[in-house]
Length: 452
Image 1 (cartoon, rainbow, N blue to C red):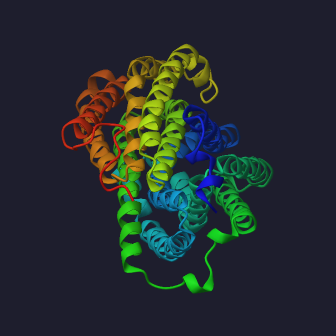
Image 2: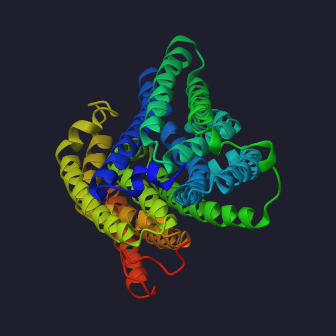
């Protein structure tokens, strides 16, 4: 592996960003489709209560999943930097340490939250009629978290070296597997909501296996060897710092959503169903933002590792333009199609849910430019290895979002959550902007002094 062989370090910056980003966006969209398939099949074959329960369970499940995926995103920043430098030995040692430490962390997380599942569901005011569905679903998902961790770790390795098309391919394999297993275990076999959860875990396991075999065949120099085994305190500290900072950022966002879900749960099943449907739609609109953020992080981290200051500056500016244009376009699309999109999840007879969901989406449309600007800041912060900045910003956002939702939901219903989310985005963008322009010595696009 040499720097000259790495296209991210050479050539047209906008083209490289787009080439990295498109598979990531497609992957994010497929991931949302992956989640949506469960909801659609559950709603079709198991009814409205099971569908509403999948929304509550999804909020809790995403908390655990994004702790693990956030940890892997943080580790992948180290992978990208070492790949840019060309340090294969350190890459392998990072891989080994992440496998060992991450496995221990994941098993401990699974055991802890299996014990706490029912108290957590009570904490978010889960209606009694939905409790059984939620418990059954979450027990299976939590027991299979180790598959989720390895899937995210191996996907992170592929993305860190720029193999985003391959990671997309394996996500497609996982999606097809998930659909087939959903239909088998829910529609054909009478396993109910447990069948949907088992399908999700097995699909993650299939994707992880495909990624591992591909890395082993095409990037053998990056796979752990016997001589790489050992305890590396400085590397463990870096992995812990980057991984936990990123995990806290991503999980804190879902803790906020989890708390908002608890507020929404006090409004009854029709509003819960409406919120479940709107979050599924928003997940698709947010997916390109996540893709751009990951691409910016990979591009900046690799070029920083290679010491290419000018490409870092120009790549940062190009990322800003691409992500803002995408955010505006997608917000307009959401505004236009929202009434039709809701009917994919809600029956036309559920007028209360449809009315609440439509009002929510029409309001939040006006704030999506801020949301996408937030994605830009998250991606560049990770690329510059300022891992704690997104966590602090997100903590501010969720505090504002939860507080405003709680204060307004009695008068505005589900629309209160839309207004609260928009106000939270204002705060998060404001914090990021002030951090880069006041609390750091270098402006956006300037190579930090600690460049490797």
